[in-house]
Image (cartoon, rainbow, N blue to C red; front, side):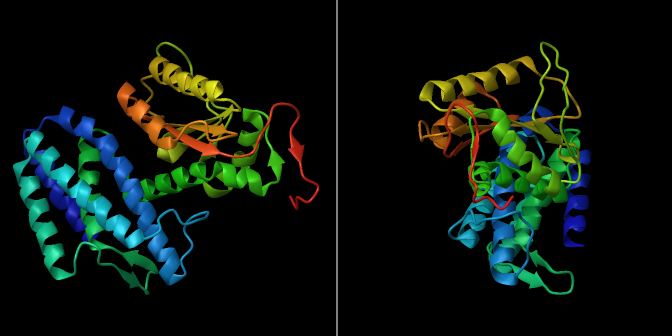
Length: 303
């Protein structure tokens, strides 16, 4: 009920004001990215303390409570700026009032386990998530928070590519080896997973390794055994992102670059991605064993 109430409040303010939608469109990708990080921390809290099991694996934050509090605090500051720049003073005032109320009542990091419905209640997360939901609505992409959390799970799974390939005891030699392993996990986890798709574009068509229909998210895998191949892989991302635009069915893209040695860091890749303005195309860098030649699978594998 808390979530629906807040969404209706923000929805009425968004519809009732003359707004600058370009400001919202520019800020939304960054807000969505941070919201997915917060959702991942929230899920980790639930898993570690209440025996819930919502993700395919692994902890990503050493202190998820501190992480979610920091992420939500940053998002709150960004939202205030967005509301002001987009000429939405009523929404800005309502957000400030709700945030101050949450700060005084239990703190931004406060959460509690709902034993009746078995989920983690985190009022500050719901507050911020509601504001982002309202912004999504006016841009024509009203992704539900449930899908936003599922998108966070997708990103977690893609970030774990090297670990999952290693778990199969496979030494990959090309993109197809990695895609074959990940296809099994993605198909099992996401009911609307699809592969063998071709996404038409204005300049060129894009053929990803797979996608999740309800998330409008497509992904591909690249393989690199040298620093030069990592750079070539990123150049390929730029070429794909620059040549493909316009689909309403697919608006989020992930390129997983699997490098066999730590030739480059994710930080450097993110900085370069921001410099080029590829807001809808996100590179994910993972490092694992690999070589050129014929793929090898250990006899010890149980798969």
